[in-house]
Length: 272
Image (cartoon, rainbow, N blue to C red):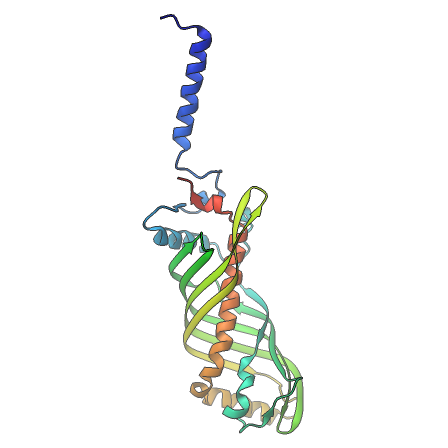
């Protein structure tokens, strides 16, 4: 049978194209910038949890400096604009014998928080359910050192206290189990998984809080307040836990979103 040169050329071209397809099959759908930093994961991998945990650990090796190529910012120090300073909500009953009165104007916030050692956490487990847009993470922080500014407006000892000043919060051996829920959004030809809610459970071994100059004209009261905060740590733990959970929740949610904003799903997972 005679085969024309034109037909032969067509066949050879088809063979070359087939070889290329076979070569790229199983690789990322697009060139992944992430591949130089870690091993990518397959969604069908029965050990997907371990792969994702390893992947995230590899990324976090660069957490202090960030990864500019992936638009991942440095996570150290970490900044949080505001949290509810919940410890004030129960100080009246716990310390001052119900001498804190509530009103519609009562408020207690910590603002402009700078968190040190936020990049030093250890990830134990990480799971992603792409269909449900759900992300579970189990991690721990050896310690967190936080400094910021409190802003309170309340009535204490039958006198109005409207004050701002420095607040310092430290915690050690913090364990976090969190489930994040979000949505997959399209950005040009890419898919991003971003989270907007977090359900978090936090435990910690020890903590300390210091509030400076709450009573502007009476340093003796300031000293008495901080002495009480130190001496009644066990009693105040229930008040402190929601505050640390809110702090850790905002930090974990923001950290993961900052990482994922620079990482389209097409660059994280290998196509089958």
